[in-house]
Length: 149
Image 1 (spheres, helix red, strand yellow):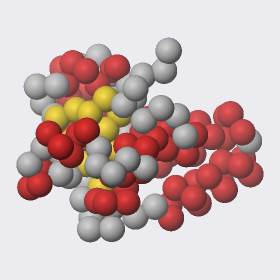
Image 2 (spheres, one colour):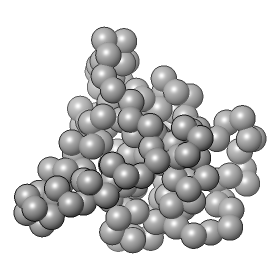
Image 3 (cartoon, rainbow, N blue to C red):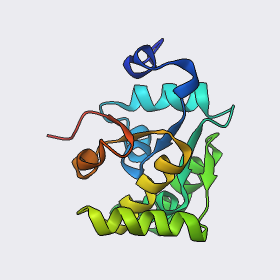
């Protein structure tokens, strides 16, 4: 874990709210490049409620692990994920309309539209490893973790 992430050095304290994309969750559990930054965010901001995930990221995380590792491993890893001190943002009609508006204007997956809408609603930094989010830089604050080669 880094003593203080590069991201936190550039942002005022009042703006340190985060939404972790599924790719950031995978990064953390797989210990990919950038995992130390995600861990720092979870440790520092999760317990105070300033680190969140969109409900759809839980489903994505589960099915990715199910496909790659099988059902039993997916259940274990999902249980580990649920132990992290992260706020889970559930769906509601307004969030659905926000996600729909984002999906209508940008070429990205439905799941990523929900995640982006969650970050927009919370005024949060979207932490990700997915270049698909880059066109949304005018809509939400982005923090890209190192992309896979």
